[in-house]
Amino acid sequence: MDKIEFDVIGIVKSPFKNLEGMPIQPTGAKGIKGEIHLNTELINGLKDLKDFSHLTLIYHLHKAKGYSLEVKPFLDDEHHGVFATRSPKRPNPIGISVVKLDSVEGNVIHISNLDILDGTPVLDIKPYVPQLYEDTCKDLKVGWFEEKHKNAKDTKSDNRFIDE
Image: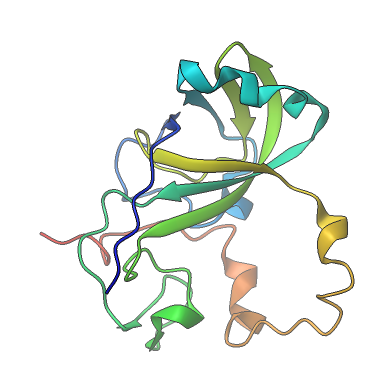
């Protein structure tokens, strides 16, 4: 397998010091505040970011060890293929979340609706622009999530993906 290297562009500061008890998705993290501390040499990349209301964060799930091709996700009692879930136990432990942008001060991006562990390395930040998906998501289907997604707001992380 080919290797690809990424540079960490910043670190997430959040109230979640442990995986257990964290919201499992941004919908369960409404109002939870945090920050992204961007590497100072990248500060010019923040120009005009303040004009957006939401961001897509791409980050490294640095506490995930190994992967499983079939997992039992937080929202279901059945096992599913890892690519049909948002499980952190992935061949490439990459996370994606949409968060609300509150403000930008220097190299610190203040955000809310945060469902990310404190100290998580950030790989990229992109403005969330829903209009880019309008035409391509008209026939949207969400598989086994169809009935389960309603529980995402109140479901918290447990230790099922933590290797002891």
